[in-house]
Length: 401
Image (cartoon, rainbow, N blue to C red; front, top):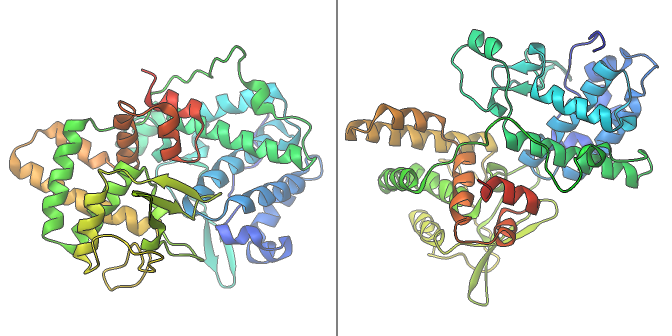
C-alpha cells in the first residue's frame, strides 16, 4: 500500500450545489479547491471531481438518495487518489477488487464514531469539519459501546452496504462509459463468473419478527390514540413497514413537499406516486396500510381517503408548517419508540426487548416489512414495491436463507 500523504476530506456538499457552476462551487467551498490542488498534476483529480459532480447532479432530487450516491462515489474517488495515485476513471478490475477489500477493512482514520457535518460555515464560505470521516458506525454490522472498543474491534460493514456500493459504483462507471470518459466498467469486470455473487462475511441488517412487530405496533397505536404526534409517528412507521418507504420518500426538500394527492385511486386500487425518486416511482398501496392512512387523516380533521390532486401536505410540524426533513422524521419516530420502551418496561418485558428497542430505526421497519412480504409475494412483485433495487438484491436480501 502506498504511503498515505493526505487525509480524506469531503468533496461534495448539499444536493442543490451539484447544479452550480464549478466557479460558484469553489467560491463557496474554497477548501475543496485547495484540497484538490494538493494532489498535484500526476493525478487528474479535477477531471474525476467534475465527472462525479455531473453524475451526482442526476441523483440530487431526494436528500436520502443523493446522500447514498455522494458517500459511495466520494469514497471511491478519495481511495483512488490517495491509495493508488490514479484517476478513478482508469481503474481496472484488480483495482476495484482492492477497493472492495479496503471498504471491508478501512484504516481507523477513515471511520468516525457518529455521523458528522461535512462543512462548517465561516462567513460567506464553508470550511472542512475536522471531525468528519468517510465512514461511520451507522453502516457497521455490530453494536459497540465506546470509542476504545470500536477502534479495537474494527469496522465491519453490513452486507447491504457493500451491495449498495457495488450497485452505485457500477452505475457511475456506466455513466462514464456513455459519456466517453471511461473505457470499461471495472465493477462488472470484478464480479465472479458463473452467476456467483461476491461473498461478504458479515450479516445483513437486523429485522423484527412478526411477534415483535405486533407488540411494537400495538404500543405505537396506544401512544397514537393519546397524541397527535403519536398519530404522525404511527403513520410514518406504517409507511415504512407496509410501503417500504424511506425517510427521504416522506421528507420535503428545497423544491417540493410531499402531498396527500400522491395517493391515487385507480380502478379500485390505491397507488402512491413518489416524485422524489429518480425516475418517479409508482407503487401499489398495501391493504394493510390503508387503516393507518385513514386514522392519520381523521386525526388531522381530513376525510378518510385523499381526494384527487389533494394538496394537503403529507406531513406537518406541530405548528402546522408543511413538510419535514429527514432528521425531523427520524426524531419523531425515535421519540415514539422511547414511549413504547417505557410502556414495555412497565409491562415487565425482558431486558432483551429493551435493548432491541434502542436499536430500532425506520430502516428496520422497512426491511422487516419486506422480509415478511417475501413469505407471500414473488421476488418480482416485491421488487416493484421496493422500487429502485435489482431483482438479484431482492432475492438475496429477503428470500435466500
